[in-house]
Length: 254
Ligand SMILES: C[S@@+](CC[C@H](N)C(=O)[O-])C[C@H]1O[C@@H](n2cnc3c(N)ncnc32)[C@H](O)[C@@H]1O
Image 1: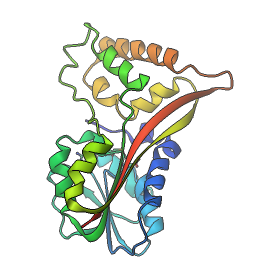
Image 2: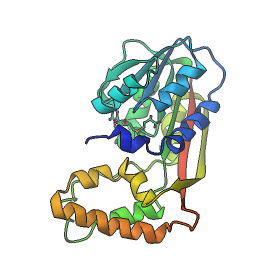
Image 3: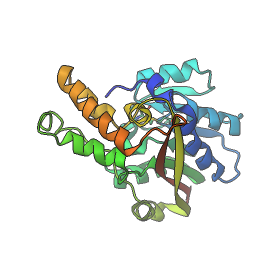
Image 4: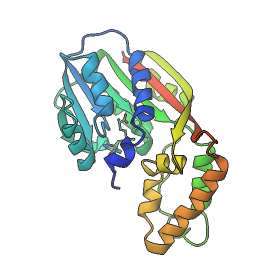
């Protein structure tokens, strides 16, 4: 499933804000080894570099295009191209950080304890995932995907994982000395035409669009875009209001 760093970075400020808010809740420590899982184009990794300039910093991602962009951004991190689920580190970390990535990974009940096992005792496992599943952009995407014109072609497209605060507490509690879990709703102010469509094009919509081609793809996009523009009208000042809910977890390893 291909990622496009430029499409993703069109909303770099809004996408990086939750990483900064997550990092602000990571307690004071002087980490020697830090990794950013699903580092993307390096925007979240840059925050880690600024907070801990002396740490040995790594950025891991399964997308070569994203890692290339991260390298070009000049962020001082060692780049690792690997899928998170099967990745095995050389040594444990003081901090494992991840912003806006775990929603793409299934079987989190097994994944999170595995990742916690790569954290040093007293170290931190911190992540953020979107949880806006009941929002119109998400509901309308699935509704559009059920249209008989392409329902079969999209049947195999896997939905993003639906995380919940309680579920993450249950998964992580046996491995944690402390847990800090919260949700935040950002009122994102997006500029320009088809703003919400452009936002989801960089993330959740990609697997649907990539499963279609030609006229079918164009018709799917047109149908979804029309619904989005009704649900999220552009105001006369050019701004589109796009509320967005995110879930944050900071776990201290026991
Ligand atoms: C939404 S971007 C997040 C980028 C950045 N961390 C940020 O804060 O904006 C998600 C990133 O996770 C990566 N990713 C998704 N699934 C992955 C997996 N299974 N293993 C490694 N990276 C993955 C994607 O390639 C993409 O760069």
